[in-house]
Length: 226
Image (cartoon, rainbow, N blue to C red; front, side, top):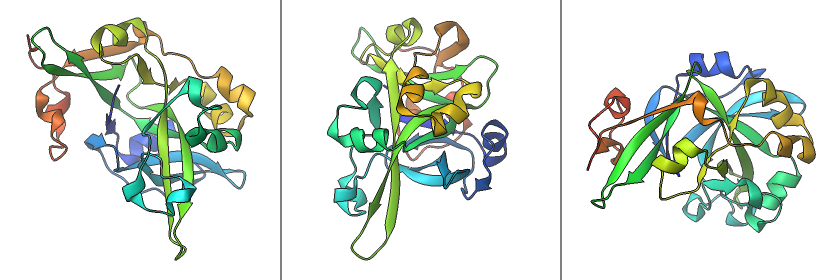
């Protein structure tokens, strides 16, 4: 399952996710990993806003300590049952991260981990569903964080990402508003595995394994490892 994202620049993201209050500040990044900040669209006081959050849940009990980061991924089947996600799910703490693509890894017969870049057909930026949490320190400092909601993999990603059975919950553009402001039943109905025929993927170089490398070479096609 992906733990690396490609985040588009702000202009592209705001064309895809139009928010009334764009507080967020970010630029194009090719190698965003857990514990880094990602842009998140959400509803606050009946208005949409764009804010930055840490990727990886930091619950209220952690009192804003990023060293106590929890899950970066939340299986859709666990949203209403797992203690870590239940409160955020019930209270409608849902958001959308704009992404250009993401990476998955395939275990080769030789035991190597071959990275693949995944993107969508005819959608240069798309929204991925998240749950978010708010954690406040004793001094009043607030840390907001999120976990990507995942679904069972479609056939394309199941074949490539053979070490996982999950993929990000990719939302249809027409479903953004309902995901952010609908009730639990309505939000649940939007969660489905994105069709394989609407996705593209290709092998890339192993540079993506290094979080210090952040440039376009990461998404360029490369020979596949044996």
